[in-house]
Image: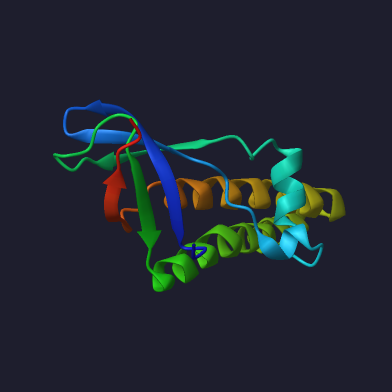
Length: 141
């Protein structure tokens, strides 16, 4: 399965929307010890638990059905830029503003900028509308 495609199970249906749960993907590079380090932080922050996502439901979906979601390659790149770029910009802006008041304020500004950029980036990434469902769900009865 491609990194841009995830398989999940429908756990709830309400008002034309479906809630699906997805396991955190296993990164092959991280498993071999040559990844970016995100796997270490994921394990540390307990990010291996299933993730839940609400989607526009297809009329034939039922609770327990398996579906796949996919994100276009260009959107993965764009969201990566948002998730990594905004915290970096936050650090730089925080340091620049904080440096007007000395080293301690520059450090505090950098940390504050990192947190603010990370929060904004996670909100943008969490509200993307660029997922598409693919394939026919399989009945699990």
